[in-house]
Length: 185
Image (cartoon, rainbow, N blue to C red; front, side, top):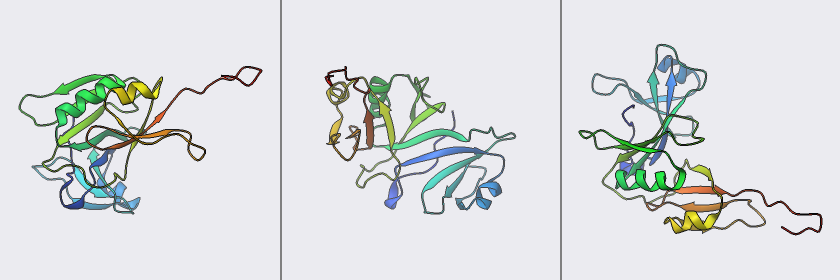
């Protein structure tokens, strides 16, 4: 499991992506800027996309075509966040005893190997630039687990906007309701 990269201090974003690359210069040619280069202490580069959004680039001898490596969420309580999300989406909680971060792995349908929760001392204060979407059999189960409903599905959006226990926004997509020939669900 890769070490998490960015931090949320001083207005930085709390959620970022880690990507595989064959060279940091490849990401720079695509428009990214190096904020913190690879070093002996840090085996990844902290980058900014053209709009300033942070992500981390991990150089691989052979980068796969699918570049997304993991989702990293800064958390006041990474263990509680990992366990909460495991209860909502499934998967296994991982942790190394000598490391402060926790992660989910083996999450059904997750398009990357790890979902990392990295410790930070400060609580979330602003809306995340990056959020995730989940599917659920019904909204009540997500709310009963401790999510907060921020915006229900309505005539403008076909999903529910919620927040996890630390306030991270996510969208919940429910199964489509199939109507019978009389127009009833």
